[in-house]
Length: 194
Length: 436
Figure: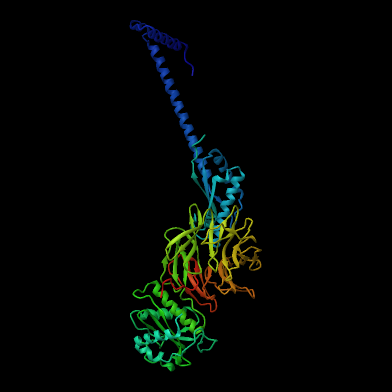
């Protein structure tokens, strides 16, 4: 925003007067620079400009905070997103890889974070076999992250077999939701480092 | 062992107290220890057995337990109709029992410290055998019931030459807790608190139960001492599941999660030492081991053919071989083997039409037999007689434990509260240390 030359002149005068005051206080000189009506409006404009500037900064700060919050939420969601498997499989599907790929930058950008991968199965099959299958699913997930450069020591694995289903029921809809690896943060948190 | 003379003295004392039973037992033949005198009955049929009323404060319970145990043993037909006199007769009317179809009559007499048993051979009109077994006095709790079960097993041994399985226990899991129940489903008791217990396995002495304990950070192998009521951790870190004690009780095999699979490891549960790996699965899953009775081999579940199947391997290494050839149907999903105590067969679960059923394979002739077909049936475990099996079945609508006689196909429901699974049948119950 441009400031009118006249207003500038007034501002300059005020500045000079102020300097003069500091040098030798002469209260009697004050009336000489009594602001006129024009001068008043110029000061108001300046104050408004200042207010506008602060407002703009506030909006920008809030925008950045919201953006950061959104990015943090996205990062948290990316890190927490479950990975799903086919029946009796621990191989990673394209979908599973895409889900895991989104976790990589989060783990890279937040090196204090350690995570736990919990492997689960559906209710079909032997209870005992499913404990081992859940473990292999979690291990397959860890291997993917390690291959993408994440330190193996940051990824702990655990299996719950078929013992903790996400969905109840004995149909494909429930089974497909239960054949999964879940993620939780065991130490550190997202966004505590730049 | 008591000497025959001492036993006779005890018996006479008991008979004097028992009064009415004296007349019948006066005909006790003197038998040499170690010599078995079998009952005379048609070997092609199940002999009828009458259990006479037992007098005394807990006499009715003793009789009911003996009758039920003999019935559950599936070797005898327990005759109750027409034999139900309120009190034991002073002199046995052998002709009457013969008419009722009884080959044997069981006579029990309570003494202050025990139960005197006499088994009569109806055809010979004579006492086959007699002895006095100790009973805990004062209470009628689980130990007292177990002592009566021992009496029932003794009666079965006298009549059939084979010890019964009444005095044995079954460990299982319900809602994450470990439970133990007697072979008749009575005296059920939780032995672990809240948690997530899986896969109990008996030590051959019956004193310890190993199990897997699942937590948020991993699953560990624990051993519960039933005498001291304390648990000890055997293996922890990552995945540790499906323990099994060797028949001599000196080794414990379990499955441990590796980088990309799960392999079987063996440790000495009561000594220090590092686990030794048994299977080299190269990324396959290997779990649910069961020892052969000689302790040299194990049957286990593995997915090395690309699907879960039952394999066998030597405990000291060597190749693992499949139990059965591949079958081009869902029947090739096989798991959870249990080697029979006589070594002759392996029971396991196999998918048939999308549902698990209990199957046995006789090792000598490779004969495969499907034992169940109602509902889904899983996790078989042999009784110490190598004839009965306990397993999980969904047939009643909830997961319950059922007992099946592999010879007759007769089944009975063991548990009544839903969610019971992963049963393990103990060896014959030991006489507790310090018992008379």
